[in-house]
Length: 239
Image (cartoon, rainbow, N blue to C red; front, side, top):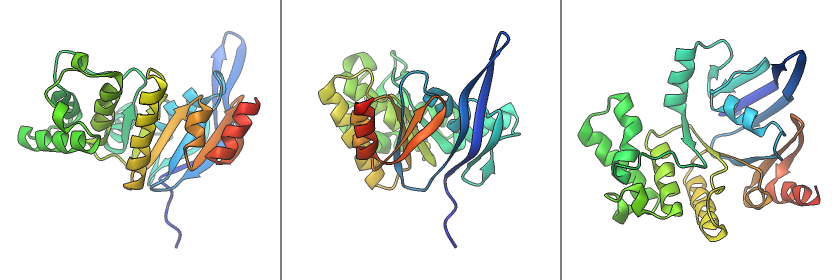
């Protein structure tokens, strides 16, 4: 029997009302993502990728269609159930890092475990392992203002990984970084993927798409291409 996908979207639409007008941010989007995949979701501003990211991250819900995250039907869940699903299944990495500036890298990574009620000794050990995984073994006591942009993003990635999520969802993870540091972060995502993590990168960048085994290209709320990252990147460059 085929393994169940981690993510399954079937004919998902998302409509917004703007005055008397209805805007279709997503229009019949369907795809699956299997365990251990590294996928880029790419498109220009206004393509629908941010709306799709919010739905994948259970920050928003579809107007119609079906979204299954692992074995859960997402539509119909209450706000509290959506919050619990986010906490248990999804690790978020944001473009702006969203770190607490007055506390150490270790304490920043521990924070999601504090909310879960994990005991201090256990959460400290798990945070240490996560920081070691992203190459920051010697920076655990440093505060964000004592770290480079790439190191701050690594802390954010460790914080997302510390809860051992089913899906790692990264929104423009290299957007605030220079090109050399951005390449380092992409290499880290590739290493995490090789280690078995399921990763979705949401981006406008053909460079990121080209480095992913698979990319989904959105335009005007619809999928126009779903295939090898290098092939999707070529189409992005043409556009």
